[in-house]
Image (tube, rainbow, N blue to C red; front, top):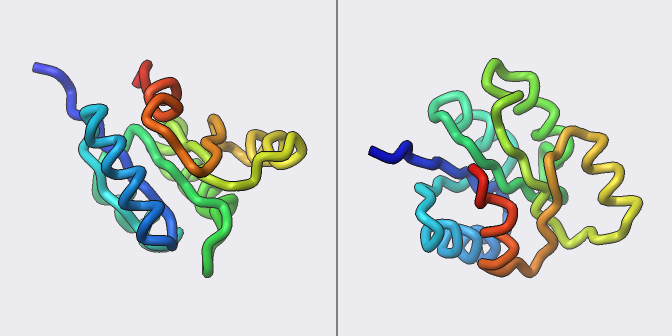
Length: 121
């Protein structure tokens, strides 16, 4: 039996969550979503996610702060945390990778980009 792949999408915009969810489900993921960083931390404490798509610019906890807090959890090192953002400049990429993200997914996303980033998970 194949191990289930659980993903968490964190974005304050419903359309972004809906699109990412639909694409991940097509790739065989079981998807949960959160509207902010606090909700993401709560969900991550309850379920063993393998992948987190994390928006950078959200009210409340920023994506970078949420990433740091997820990394500090007992399962944090096993998570693949992807910055899910419109920030595509090289300096943004370097800052996000240094902040603990595994990779960057630039909005708008495509199924091909998701497949590339999640294929080995």
